[in-house]
Image 1 (cartoon, chains in turn red, purple):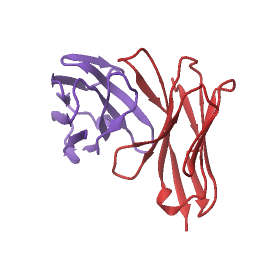
Image 2 (cartoon, helix red, strand yellow):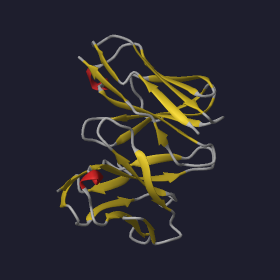
Image 3 (tube, rainbow over the protein chains, first blue to last red):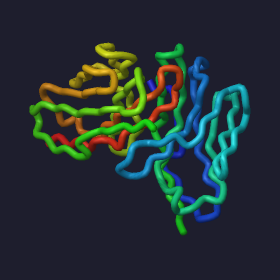
Image 4 (cartoon, rainbow over the protein chains, first blue to last red):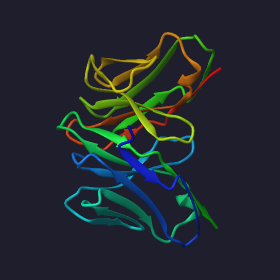
Length: 114
Length: 112
């Protein structure tokens, strides 16, 4: 059962454009929503994260938009650069302190063309 | 600072052979430890997680097992590999009170 659905599977954006990746979830117990960035042959690294008490979080060119009622959240990459080309995973966490686990989306492969 | 070491980086094994992947974390105590598998072009699937020495939770029934013999050591094993065990295996850790995951560099396993 896929608890976090991510789209699109792949995305091509021109340099300077906006990249948008969307995720949707079903489990209302999720209370932490991170995005991870993964370069080929490497492990994913935390990029930005949000909790459901806010609707938006911005860090540099990266913004998470969160819609609690729709159970959706998205990653926006402004002024996309070729160095942003990577696979992006959304995730969601639930559970008691000490036993929290992340459920990941299927990933979006982003290519930023120069 | 905390670091996570995972090895080997690549591994090619024949079907039916055993497997042992090792992961160690430095610079922290009592971490939660995780093994994830990433199939080609797919997402990250949680295989095992551990909240302490000898405490292993399995998320997916499969041909693999995990052990945590020391606080900062996590081992993924198999007695007999299957073709379907091929994939990119990632070890990760988090603080006990925090869900931020820190991943190792991964092991690319090819079972032929």
